[in-house]
Image (cartoon, rainbow, N blue to C red; front, side, top):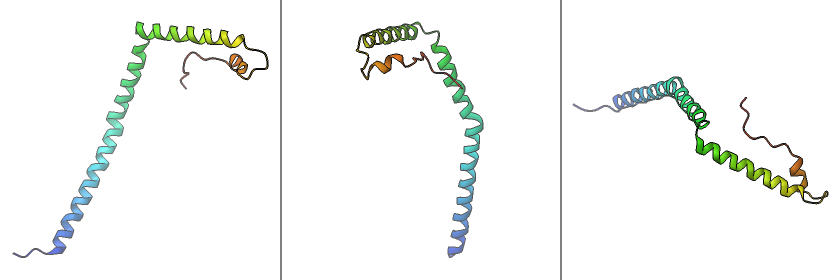
Length: 97
């Protein structure tokens, strides 16, 4: 039984269309099911970090260090370029839109 190349082209074409359909279906499933779940997990981990005492301690240490650096910058002369950093507003956290 001889094998015809046109049959091979038909089989390869069918496999290509099937693989593309499978890839498109997987992408849609990812977008609908997994991505929102990952977003929820990241939001949960971020919210859970608020109650973490070690994180709060590190944040307060960082705030103290920033205050100490600002105090050092306040001692610089008036014309100093670094002096502009002292007047810049400091936001302690990220604001979410």
